[in-house]
Length: 269
Image (tube, rainbow, N blue to C red):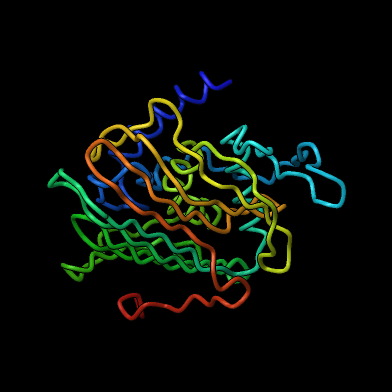
């Protein structure tokens, strides 16, 4: 199984390194966990399959969410499906992500920031993406996805879309890359959003993990917190590469308190 995971890491990380950040994004020179575009939201589920949790970790503790075990992520696709199923079940949430360079030898290295408000009750979404080449915003409401270029102050695309697709496509590449990058070990539980969540310490990186910007990943530290439903509440890590060191933070905040406002550029559009 370790051999299979290592092969997957190489493929996904290389793809992530040359993909856009969110629908219509252009952040193509970022570090290992760079997200994919909305046109290919793989493996974005459009239905809600019934998952069977894995073995119970111990008496009195909830079962591991689908795709997870005591040693971390056993099945990245199952873990990703469980995460989005839990997120889309509500309530509303703000998804944040940022990468910060601690050191780098590559001139293409750049910081990345995402803030995405997801209204699962109203079926609305707003995302603000600051990438290495440009900044963009995306707004979804009433079955239409509109994308805005901040520098040029112009609408770059408007198309019909499904809420479930859009909600999964923005941050999917980021999350996928993190799920397959690390070696993990469980270290107790905490409470998040009124539910039990598992804490995983990052003990290193998978074999052959690499970044087109920073080279081969050699070590990592930090933690991941995942709820019993499969929702990934937090990823807080530092990764050392042959050509740099980067800190990452992915988080779900404002659960049940997030509202999606219409941006001024979308008023009357």
